[in-house]
Structure formats: structure tokens, C-alpha cells
Length: 368
Image (cartoon, rainbow, N blue to C red; front, top):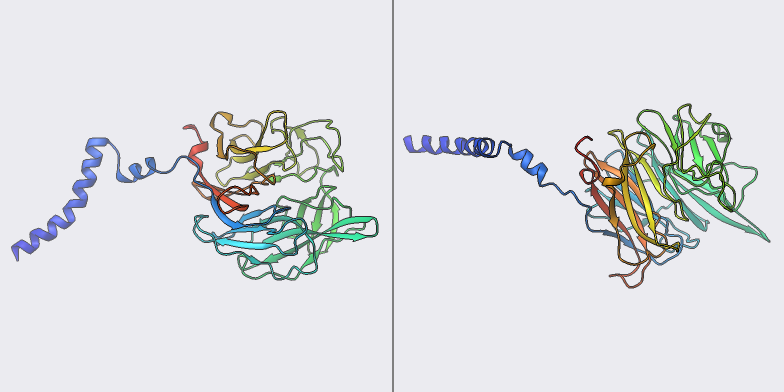
């Protein structure tokens, strides 16, 4: 009996001795050791799915239950289906893609995914329309209240003057439960869901097909490279390299801090901790090819960016085919995830949609 008692004591004393040894010898506890050994560099790109070509243009969101949803056009160039893949483990693995069943009779230009405050998910896209010599696009959306498992019937955004540039590629900006700011290429407007009608946004300017976000402090940041976007794009003028507003869009001040926009632009996302993350494209010198994707943080609502701690998350050492359209979301308190596509036919398994996990620690200084 005495030997059994000694064995039990040893069993309980061993963890305590290990803990004390760490503390006395190193001055740290085991949890700190795990934190210091946590990844501080971007992970290897993970293939979400294989694609054919054209306007793949993926969209990404984190559902209220923590799932990551990736939606993209598998065939591109006006494909007839938007495909959805899901990850339940922070983007480490992905389900086989399945078509969104409610989208029918539509040649698709992909749009965006947005998770609303109440957990509902909004999926946007535009349908190509042709009648004689006239060409236009009709923006549509559907919603999901069960984290992307089932989707509502399609709703068409009501406009009297659709153009071939009535399309968006970035998440909507939720003003409240019924009002969403839609940054279409040819106009920036508010869609009132309860009334199914369009009204002007802010001072009425067109920001273009750019990211439009609200920080935790309530500041609005627009990715507009110009003071007012021309449609279609023309010779650059009135360059502002981003705009910010503290009065819900009634007035805007130039940021003069965002990089070259390019064809595929860049992405902005407000993090829960307060900073804003910029996903930008690095271009070749003297050419428009995309060569790499980079993340960097702003701790002052976009006025300045921590370029000293910018992190390149994808650089294949060659031009990225198809422009990629990278999209970034916050997976958890410590991790970001970026979705993009690359159509290079010579890469392993051919053209595909990919996902990269990046530790926030890789982008932060000791002060932050």
C-alpha cells in the first residue's frame, strides 16, 4: 500500500517539477515556450480546387461558426456556376467544391462574400446580358442563414440604367441591418434591402470597384485610387491613393498612402484588434504582370502602413497568371488567411485556387 501511495505522489509531483524547472532555469512557463515556437512566417500555399481559366475571381469570408467559405468561377469567362468550397479547420483542408444551386440562367462575373453582423452571409455576383449591340451586367445576390449550407432565392439589384460596368468584386459595407453600400465599378450606392431600392451613398461620388471598409473606431476607408473613379477607366487624374471619412461618407480626405491599384487592385480588411490589413500586388518593373502578394498593417486607420514589417505571402518566381485577385480575412486572433488563384499551366496539378495562412505575429512589432 505504501508503494502505491508513493507512485501516486510521483505522478502528481512530476508535472509540478517540470513546471518549476522551466520557471527557475529559463524564467518562462511552458505556454510561453509554445508561443515562442509558434509559426511567424506564411505557410505553404494550399490548393483549394483546380480551375480551367478566365474570370475565376475568388471570394472569401469567415462564417459566424468559424468555417471559411471560398467561392469562385471554375471555368471563368462567363461560367454558368459559382463553386463553393468549405474549410472547418482554418484553411488547412478544404471540401470538394459544389455549385451554388440557386444561381440559374446566368453567365457569371464573380462578385464577393460578406458576413453580416447577425451572421447571415451575402453572396454577390453579376450576370452578363447581351441584346443586339448593347451589353450590360445585372448585379444579383443570395443569402445564407446557416453558414453557407443553404441559400435563399436570387434577388436582383433594381436599377434603371444597368451598364457593362455594373459589377463589384469586394464585400459590401453593412451600414445597418437593411442598408448595404455596394461599390460597383460604375457607381457607389446604398441598397435598401427592406425596400428593395437604391439610394445615393454619402456625397454621391463614385469610388469605383474598390474595397470599402469601416474600422473598429468607425472611420470609413475607401480604396479609391482617384478622387472620383472614371468609367470606364481612363488616364489617371486627381490621384488620392485612398480616401477616409469620419462622417459616414459625407466628406472624404485623401490618404495618399495606398499603393498602385492595377487591374486586380488590392484588398482591405479591418481586424478585430483594431489594425487594418492591406493585401497588395507587387508588379514587375515596366510591365503590368503580377509577381507577388504582400500583407502589411496600418495602426492609424490607413494614414500610414508598417512597411518595415510587410510580409510577402506568395512569390512563385514568375508572373502570376490570371491576376489572382487576392482576398484576405481574419481566421482567429492570431492568423490571417488569403485566397487567390494562379492559372500557370506548368505548376503542379495545373491552374488552381490557393489559400495561404499568415501568422499576425509576422506583421507586428513589439509595440503592437
